[in-house]
Length: 461
Image (tube, rainbow, N blue to C red; front, side):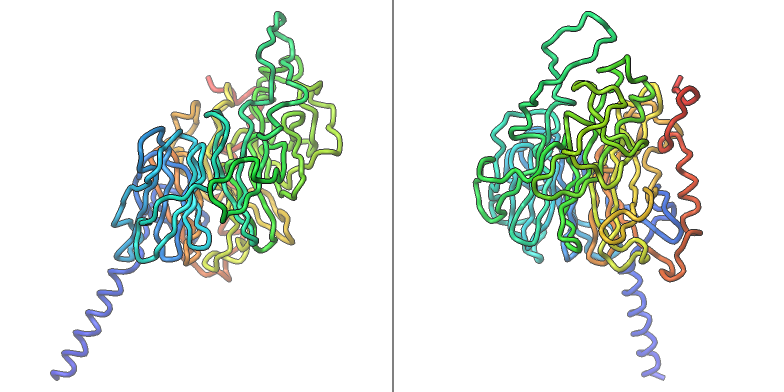
């Protein structure tokens, strides 16, 4: 009887300890709307206004804050008891913060890489220590002054190279010094666009060389307006990015483009990048309804004239102004097979689609096969805006921003307004997952913040 008592006690203690370490899903998935059998929990309610995130092999989370000055522009989080919630939250970062477009946070070969607006840094990680103890090393300094679209997004190939975005700082390289007496006149662009000498491009550097200048690198590709989401696909051994399309088609050429055209064009671009590629900014834009690259109005276009074959098309035309701000190819084993090697995209949401509703503010998914999209954009995670119609960006409660894959194959999502972090897991039978699990998500394409608005009936009053 005594042995039975001790055996029963040990079993009870073992089961109790195991339950204490289990993940605890939020009853309402932390506010997220997901495909059936996906569950979510809130890792932290908000670490502060932030950009991208990274998750280490031991589950530690690192977040890049968007602050303009001072130190401690990074946040580290650790879950000690295994319930999925962050127990330790510490700010760190012995470097000067220099602007709210400080974006990147990535882990590569034991180093934590992060960027301010003007500098790319790295620190050596120790899995036993949450906060890196070494002094930040400078990989690269931007020689240009502070400007718009100044995010330094990063990607790493398998040959010690680091890829860095140097986006253009104008909308379409327009010449705003010229006056126009006619309100229907077309704004003109500088030709040739002098920004393309160094900007509007993605550059390649050696990741192991410190204190590099821009001229130490190689201009890998050009003609990109603003790339915030950049990643290397290891399965395909290929660089990919999501590029923000230009704005103001109606404002710059009102005799050719209506306000509705302004809201639904041009495409945001999901691009596959080879060395030497030119994606046509600012001379062209991509129309995802026509599946064609057209000449920009600042350079003689009228919405009909097609661009030459000198410019590369995207592999997928994304909805206009949705602001794709992060890109992640899923390589884990937790999710059903249809997600394997497909692309998750965090859409930060539009700011200038008026008088039509603002749109985006979701995490999308595009399935891949043989290195290319094999299906249409799907809504994977919704519920961020918490309102029926987003008239203005301030109406959205959250704006999806960062994506990271955990060591167990779960998906981490961050947002920029408060720095809230979710963790999404699959909690069903992978072999049974199919179209029925996606039915409620397919219906969401009719919502005002997702659908393409009708030209005359969806104007926000």
